[in-house]
Amino acid sequence: MRILGLRPTPALELQNEAVHRVLLANLDALYRAAKHLTGRADVAEDLVQETARKALEATPALKDDRNTRAWLFRILLNGLRDYLRRKKLWTEVPLDEEVRDFALVSESLASATAEDVRRALSNLAPEIRTLAILIDIEEFTIAEAAWILQIPPGTAASRLLRSRRELRALLKSYQSRTSRSGG
Image (cartoon, rainbow, N blue to C red; front, side, top):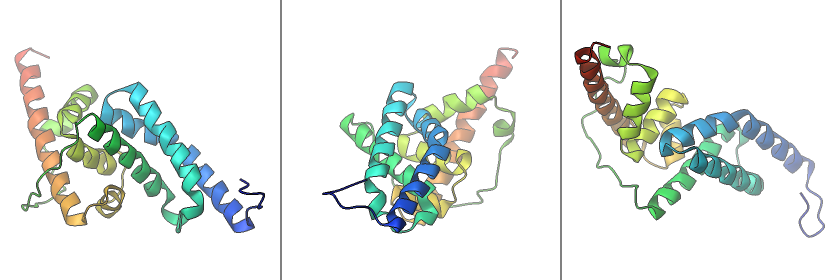
């Protein structure tokens, strides 16, 4: 990468290589998250492509490359947020003060099929669906997800609880319909 004929420093070259490696290793995860969040392959592809472009351009500004994966997801979700705002689909969720045990997994979640889970996820509001995907699918911690979304960790925890409650309720209704239809 040459700017005005200047040669990049060895440290910047190493950083560029590290970002390239992490980007390539996470392209599928970025696409999967974007597809879950948008429900559309074409939009997911565009978002991932834009994420890669922005990440590669911003590599010199990356201060700590130990968290590059979270940084890439932050870029993706900022792009998604911009896309949804343009489409007027993103709304902020009020903070749910009641935070309980996150380890609870209901029987309906355990017995749900992958398709039921996909359908239920798609019915969640984007801002709480994002947390469910980042934490439960992509395995980020609450602190990492909060950093990616630029929200306080308490807000992330509260929204995660809300997403899990809504998922349980949705999956319970899918389970009820399946039981009634004999499936």
